[in-house]
Amino acid sequence: MPKYVIEREIPAAGKFSAEQLRAISQTSCNVLKNMGPQIQWVNSYVTADKIYCVYIAPNEEMIREHASQGGFPANSVSEVLTTIDPTTAE
Image (cartoon, rainbow, N blue to C red; front, side, top):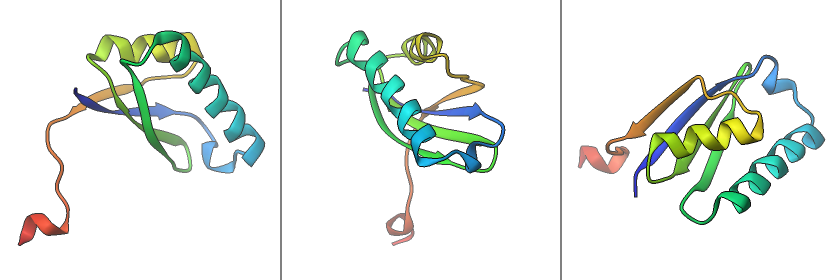
């Protein structure tokens, strides 16, 4: 199943409280539950003004539908073609 990186432009995301992040996470999980098992949230990285999320889904349209239902921006959705890490250099 394809993996995607979603870039969400959210001003001051890095200043969100634990409660705000919990609420966002709960909203995302509720939408995912309603959409079914084909789409999965792997993890997210919070930076100063953006949140980068990693999802597994059959297509980009499902990623965008999740964003729409959750009220989240999905400024960029990119399919991960391969991954590399330090072991790639060996």
